[in-house]
Length: 76
Image (cartoon, rainbow, N blue to C red; front, side, top):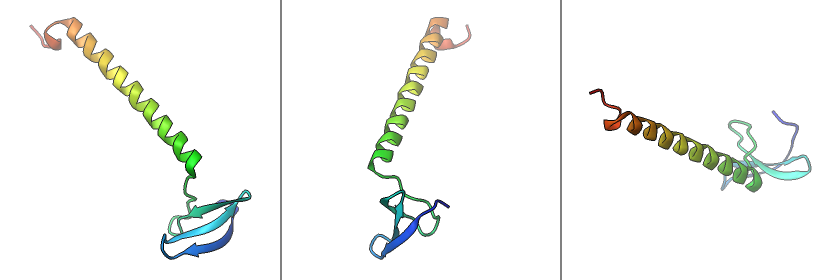
């Protein structure tokens, strides 16, 4: 668990409010995990989009190679 100080609890959100490295953050009391902030979520989203684009490009390349084999890669 990270070195944090409990600052409060939201009954509505069912999350703890903690101070982590001088910043208020939300923490899941069940797992102890600090929830990502806006900037962390944006970076995670950007990484996921980049991975998805790379996978789509790889699929397109493999499909092109199959087409180059003739008849979609089916044996004669």
